[in-house]
Image 1: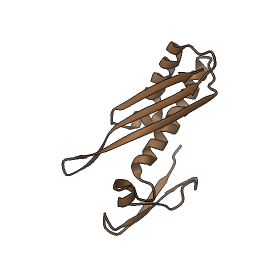
Image 2: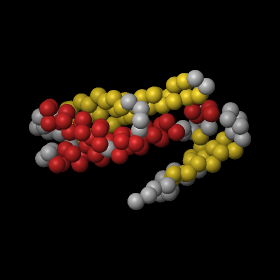
Image 3: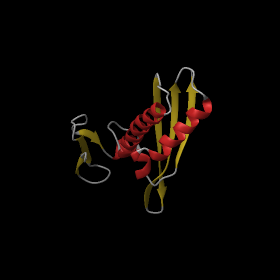
Image 4: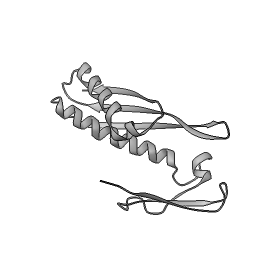
Length: 141
């Protein structure tokens, strides 16, 4: 299976404009650029897209692992915070932190923590990323 994301860019780094699209069409020419990435301007940026991809992947993996352990979540909410820092002459993604809130009536804390750790280590996006991945996982029942 292969999925495609694409980007177009025109102009210089600070005055240029870009558009990001996905094969599914969920994103179609979504604007991105320097201001969106570094100055809080309108549009998206690669880091928030990586964060969304990681949060979605982790949530699905956690659902699978919980199900294998006999637990079904009423809800899984994941926020992935991607840190972009200046290093030398460029920038690097230096960390990703997952904040996870899960509601599973009657779940045991130890079983939940084991499942959350397994999802963090084994979701395909986690495996892809070389940056340290940290997580807070809270359980509400």
